[in-house]
Length: 496
Image (cartoon, rainbow, N blue to C red; front, side):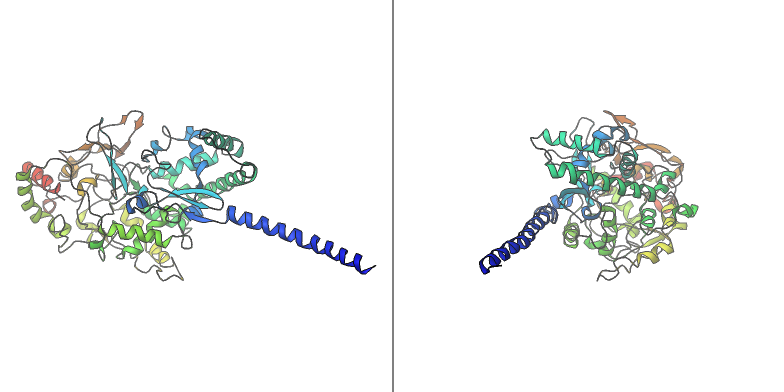
């Protein structure tokens, strides 16, 4: 072959070799740009970050945003009412997500999942006709986490959880705002996302099958540490009977700085705030590799100094002054000297279950075996867990913002402060939870409303295992006081 032809052949061979490589490189760069990002939606305002900022849970547990929006239409029969609001989720005007859900662009999709605010934000209304006011860091006494889980598990088991039903609904929602899925999304991304999401939900439904044999937790409660056992692959079908049915109220989480070193959680099983917070973050879908440490750290720093909201209604100052003296005699040693003074001989310490006499299911659910397993969490990280301990009772906590922390006791079995000052036999045996109209006289939420405007509320029965309203009673706890002294004490507690 002549040299000129040989050179030309070589050039063609070179092009044939290089061009596919370049095309593959361009395609790889396109795929990286389309599917390689990991960008949370960020908020400069710490309060907005608390409400909508990511903890990292979307990376492992996140739902595709448009699938999340489509499911209440596709699986409406598995919801107790209209949309996610029927589960007690709170929506602010103009927001794409309910309070307590975050968004992250991950694997080419906008993915969403829960954050801290879903369990620690709720609302108050003055009357049924009033606008609801949002309070951050209070217990989420409207949100029904068990019903939330059941909706997704039941939907995943439904034949409608398929690309044939979900993708048309996604397209319909997008078209309502002048958008649509592109071809790659329509025929590759979303079919694959729907399949993966269904497989993951069915896997989780199997692991959480034990909860189907429990009594309903109702809004504002979760069986915290039995859920943790699932994450450690405990054989839940072999769980000891005394460890079962242990739902506990979501706590308030404001003003954390003075709580450092106290015995935390209802049973006081940890004394390190950062460790407790990382443990709680598992509830937002995070794992040790996926936790967004900086984002969670922002929330922690904000909560250190965030104060409890003041009681917004009128206070009888004369009665409150009388109640202050009663408080000092009966309450201060365990709950602090005053609204902002947390000094007291037993504040932040555990009172033995035999002394306080409250329902012991939550205490018994936290086992030595679980504490041992928790010591393996974050192995290889500087913040490996080392502070979880099995205890013998329930922790005494400061009472700042106590007016927003109803219902009372660790399992939310007493609807108001005034009821808490009565012996157990005189406390309501049955009441309704999840209603946000405030009872200014008894200090708690109105608890005799079964339904309103199509929303049904949870019937709380204190005879159900784990729901007992006994304990925190007797001469030492003020239940033997005269009626006017009890009301004066309640009036003083409004100042906290």
